[in-house]
Length: 99
Image 1: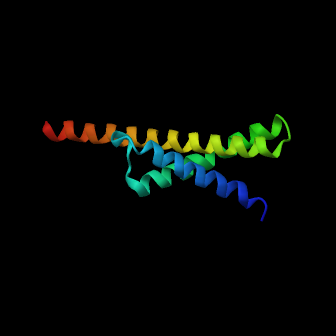
Image 2: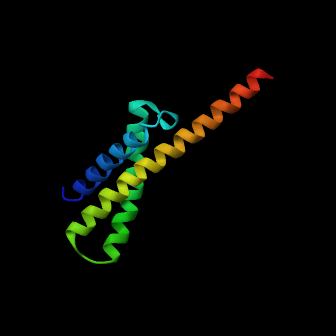
């Protein structure tokens, strides 16, 4: 069960990051969308940051901090990218409908 704690931490940090990114209306996917995109982004970047932290030292606090920061940034990044792509698709559809 020890392996589950970092994953839960990464998902929670990612969800928080995704909802922080969603505060800006143009990047909002709705509460559920922000949470899902943030959780996935947090898990992905959290795993990468955990790997990088594990190769550069062995402090438990440093690993946890790296996972939390990495996961939060991953949540922000994936939510923002997803919202921007969605907005581009919607704008393209609006242009095509006007033609």
